Image (cartoon, rainbow, N blue to C red; front, side):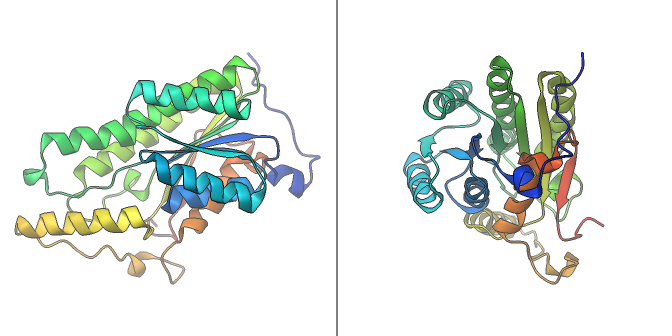
Length: 277
């Protein structure tokens, strides 16, 4: 079966980066990295469905971005680890936006706990969100992209933890992100004949609200167990003299979601300031 991806060599840069007329879903999109991604996709012209475990902030973010960029944007609450919840979100995108072209699996958990102190429930919840959530979102997105024959792009937010272990206490997180990295490759193979590309973006630590809260909680748990955790400031590992910002990562996601990256599928782009070199 030939892969139904067009040759866009004759398109201008403006045409390649434009998402006008496309419909995008961003999970975990109410704040931090997810909201920054949603903003850049909206700026490029995409209509949005912002999905978050907390519905009110998702609706607020959607209203803000709709007003700022003049696109259609709606917000909804969903648990990405729950099948019915993800199905409902995907159906909402189709019914309210008219279809589905881009799905960004951004929602994730970042807990830290020493292995000997880690409860089963923490391990299971991290995998439920960071791995199962990526699978469910990708499956439901691809089903709808394939149903109307339009194809699309799935972007999975991985992490440098899919490539390395930066510090102790990350067993669940690192394992889940390695799973998401492998899933990105496998999805690309399965979905290419349907016109669906799958790419990963792997940021290093970005000081968002959620990441900072998780880092603080992990350090407190480690201290209670008598284990000294290194600071999360990875400045010394950055090759660009600063930590990344949410928008640094959002611009890479925009590249992955647009026709600029049309030749790519199955790859994961390291957005890490050279940290993993």
